[in-house]
Length: 285
Image (cartoon, rainbow, N blue to C red; front, top):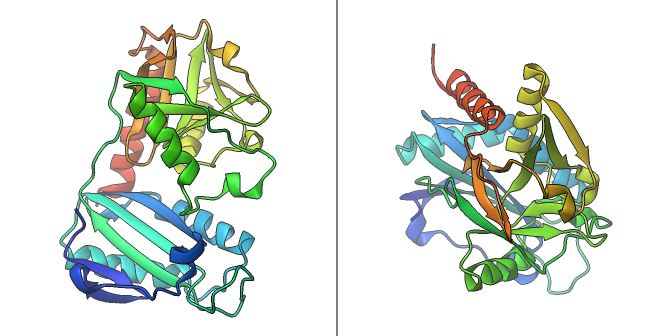
């Protein structure tokens, strides 16, 4: 459930009365982007990273830029205060805006910017069950790198996940390489190496994924980023799923593969280091 207020185009409005025109291209065509940001102690964690990704995606889609990062931050601060939200989730959505019907985009349109907050709800728990789904990521498409509000492939994959009594779905890309989960980036431990698909595999450059890579570099953990088939996971000791809401979660199964070492020392080190970073960056001194 969302909180009492939302921010629509920079103005706080009661959630129950907020609306967008039926001509909004986000509604009509899924012509929009979003970011989901975890809030700790009243601080949106790694806000700059999320807004930077949003800004680059907006440039790719040729959205007209109307708000600076400072303007976003000011509105977010006002929204968190109004909703008395110290812990939870901030969602920022930007569409191309409202205009005449038709696919041809009008670069002069003023984007619609909607921000909401809500309690945090972890969608995946330690020991979760992952299955490989039929939906593929197209590593050749620029859309695979964007956090688009058009989530239909992921939604179809979630149906498959539920039909198979699992918790998360793993997609391959068109070339058959491991890509990402429906709501997560993936890593796995094999020997002393931490493996993860490269961005070129058609995955989202996750903010939490990047933090894991930063921790690994600092701790001297050997990382292999590349293109890997499903067979690369055979013999792996642990499978790790990441996103801003679940943080770092170890899975127990992928299809017929079992990962018995969910307390793998390197995975535990990554999880502990992540929590320390969150604490440092969201706790006032």
